[in-house]
Image (cartoon, rainbow, N blue to C red; front, side):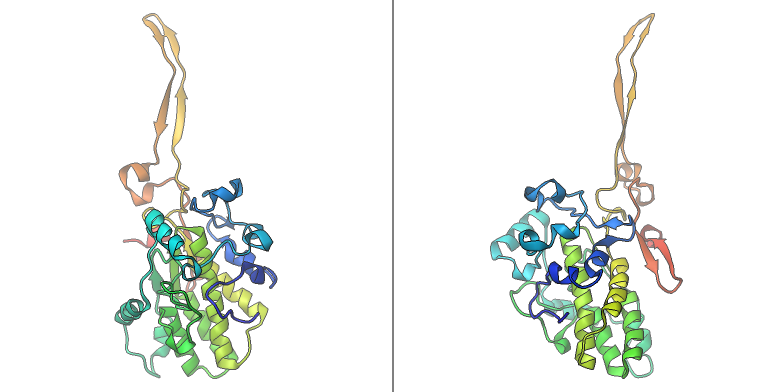
Length: 305
């Protein structure tokens, strides 16, 4: 599977290559697929409703193979519409580069590059993940950016890995560390899938640039597993799976008393976290992420101090 020369990664290509598409669609918290979490596709049918899972057959084939596309290849009108309706905006790459440089905690050298590669970083509300990897310019219609010109924080890590690792074995070891220490979350399922695809193809691009050949499908699937853990779907205000909080209703039956009839009524019980803005009291599904150093899952909300 050769890296694409344009911004749009075809889900049909992923589906033809082992389990790549299935892995990139999984939600590790729910153990189901990620959900659409947007009304943008509802006119295609009930399976495209916001709360429905994104299934492989809904993003592939002659009918739906071009359904999900990155902002860079959407029409200007569609870009403006998503900005108006979804508040979807993207930061110019020059600003991304400056912000990521300011976020670098250490000066990189031959003595400490491993520490830099392993440094934990997170992009909040990541969209297509331009702060993590910059395969293309999200605000311009264009081709894939050259390896040496990419400015995401994972790009920077992989550039360092390629500089100091000579063999495929060593390179894969430290590229794995780079991916395991790079996180991002997003509400909308379409953006999340694009972000995950971008991270997978970034892995392929850097490996091919370094060694002149593509990584094996087995290695691609291993990295796709890491990506499906680290780039996750979450409501960034509640730390739960989007739209998973629910309100309960209880019917209080009426009764006939000596003083007259008491009518039936409905008591509504809102999610306590939603009602009182208490992060630890939501009844939705709290998102879990992987702590790779301890090789165990943790609730994202428990990391918030």
